[in-house]
Length: 104
Image (tube, rainbow, N blue to C red):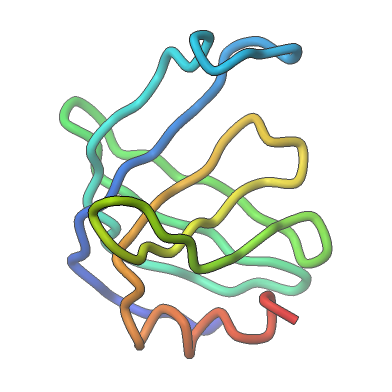
């Protein structure tokens, strides 16, 4: 299993309803991405939120990874295909390189 250790600040969002509108986003938390591990067919983000450690699993083909822009600048957006959880991070070159096979 490949592993990339980091210390990158970001935001994790977990939507608590399946049919959601923008105002339904309930769990928006600052996180520190501590590690990314690759496994067969996917990867895991290991994050530290203010009150707990979180591990979110993403699968190849079921994950959307893109660079987006907003008024604060560019950011890396990693979203599960169902749209119920995502992480926004700085577009860190090590992360982009480590996850390039999932971006194709």
